[in-house]
Amino acid sequence: MTQKTKVLLVIIGFSLLTLFHFDFWWFHLVDPILFGFMPFALWFQILTGGIVASIFLYFSYKVIWPDVPDEFDEEVE
Image (cartoon, helix red, strand yellow):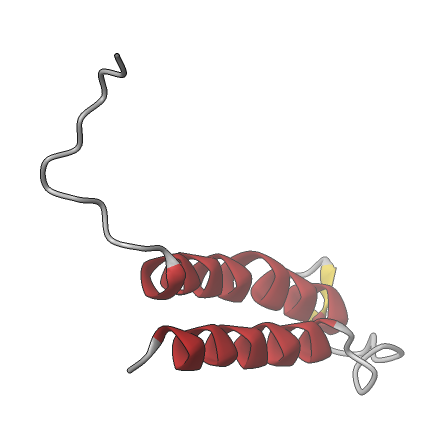
């Protein structure tokens, strides 16, 4: 897979994550209270914003970031 394809996949994933973050379909839904105190829409925001975004950022880092050379010389003369 080329670098251009990898970047395109990350951009598509970011766009989908942004679309799911704005929950137009559950915005006014308060009825199912989870754990006795948390509305469903808030739980969905925690799921997409915290957990899924963290996993996405980790995998996008692994896909896009270039490989570090084996012989990395830290001294600059």
